[in-house]
Each structure stands twice: as structure tokens, then as C-alpha cells.
Image (cartoon, one colour):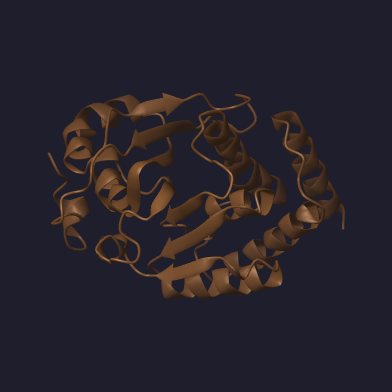
Length: 248
């Protein structure tokens, strides 16, 4: 009970600092999510974080701050269609959806047991209208029902910029964007990945300011790749090639 109270207080304080007024029942939903992540983490590799406070900061509040940055940039509009590529335990997409019930969310994850975990979580949290896809992004990028359908693709530490562009931009409509939580090597990744972004239909990469530096440490970087042109039909390439031979 003490851990739950501590996690709840940390979550409430962090959301308040971000200026987020969570919908009724949201804190309870996050705490249930926290319990399920910790329980499942003992039998599958969902997260390297173990304490409730670490999970609240690095997964819940980081995702919330990411959403605030996207809202301020006009990228996370009301009723937006969002695809989370390589979502793992549901980050950052599921926290965004808990805080923004208007979002139409699709979670993409290649590992079957993680998708089963997500199905259990979305049912327990009563957000079962979220679409779950147990597939590789390279495959879904050629699915005519999903290709260039989404307003926004989100991801977290999925791949370097060149590979990330090939995995995510085929799913994004022209005028939409791919946004990612990245680390300290962002500038060099943007430089080496610029040609790949253009080949996938993207425009110039930019970085968004992270709200409240110090909320989580180290402070993440937020990358945005705008979608300016249709992705060529041959992209993305088959599974494995995207990472082994990044576009140049």
C-alpha cells in the first residue's frame, strides 16, 4: 500500500507540473497498469526498471511529457489517429491514450507474448477499443488498410533515424508526422539519416523541447519527422534489411 501511495503521489505531482488534468479514474488506471507491468516483468522482458517510482517517471511521466510536447507543436490533435511502432509494454502510446481518450490508437508489437500482455492490460483498464497488431512494421507498411493512414506515428528508442524513417513514415499520411523519444546522439543520427528520411517522403527533421527538463533524468530528446510526400511503393523493405542496411 505504501508503494502504491508513493507512486500515486509522484504521478499526480508530475502530471500537475505538466499542467495535465487527467480524466476521472485515470490515476487508478495508471496504478493498475503499474501493477501489471511489475507482475509481468518477472516473467518476460518488459522493462529493466523495477521500482514503482522508476516506472512512473521513465514510462508514465515521460510519455505524458512527450504528449504535451506534441500537443504544443500541433501534432497531437483531437481525435488523431496514432500508431505506436514497437510499443513493447505499451509505451508511449498507452499512457497517451489514458490521458487522451479521444485518440484512436493502434499498438504495433512483433513479440506475441507482449501483445498478449497488452490485450490483458487494455481489457483490465477498459480501453479495449485500442487496436493491437502482432506484426512487424515492415509488413504493416505494405498493408493497404494501414499504409499512409495515420496522423501520427510514435515510438521510443526503436531504431536510429534512418531505420526509424523507413519503419514509421510509410504508415503516416502526407501532412502527418513520425515522432520519437530519443537519446543523446540525436544530432548525429539526424545528420546521417537525412537522406533516408527524404527517400521515405519525409521533410527536414526537427527537435521539440522536452517539457520540464529534470522531470526525468537524463532528459529525453524528442524527434519529429514530417511527412511531405508519399512513400515510394517499394518501401519499407523486407524485415531485417531495414536495420542491417539502412537507407542512404
